[in-house]
Length: 292
Ligand code: NDP
Image (spheres, rainbow, N blue to C red):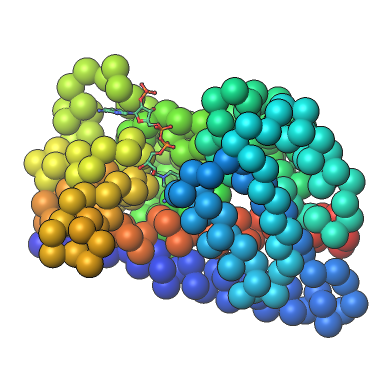
């Protein structure tokens, strides 16, 4: 039996529509438009593409975006100085520093400089710390893992009591995804590059979140029949038949796994659109917190 395909694009569109309606109501009530400042340091093509799509989403939803681009050799003081200016700017409700930063910069200090009320990516140590503690509420939850949980919930996947396996332990996806699942009362196993016998662990998963950045890594016979599989990976795979000579694939071998799983997200069109939708939701929330 083939898995139910979770349509991230459609679910994200619905979230964005709700955000656009709430923005319109705010503006009609005489309040400011939510504003998102993006900070891009350097010239990574992928980072520039992600930032552009975030700015475009702001415009579509009636929000304002403020774009800041610093050179690859920007100093720590320049980046932190810009963040402090944005903290003080009342038109800016959310600040997004696009990661990864060039290696000479201290990422932790820069993320810590963002005012937690404007931390729409949810990466400030205080927000992450609250996510990790029982009974504490972060102001903002990181967008990609929050999008993964939203897809599971919207698809009716039971989370409480389920065994969830998270493949990857990065600060931006794997670890916060694991914390969110624990918060929803799943029993969570986190796997990484030193984990032994991954297939045996993955076979136990009722829910699998794959976020390692390895094309089509998870095979069909590793997956428990009926499991919910959320594929975060974005990898390019050479394909002479594709117009660009490559196509995007996830960390999961989609064609094999869809024959075994109960639910699966496609790549593209699964988690990717949710990340932006959740960022828009967080930016609206930031505006509502700062100017109720
Ligand atoms: P990172 O490179 O920061 O982390 C990768 C993680 O995977 C690490 O924890 C690493 O383990 C683990 N890992 C790597 N190789 C293996 C392996 N062979 N077996 C088991 N674990 C392994 O990646 P990110 O978390 O930033 O991103 C993961 C993927 O998600 C990428 O493809 C990225 O493009 C995508 N992504 C998609 C987003 C979206 O919006 N859809 C947003 C963000 C990321 P260790 O810790 O031991 O090194």
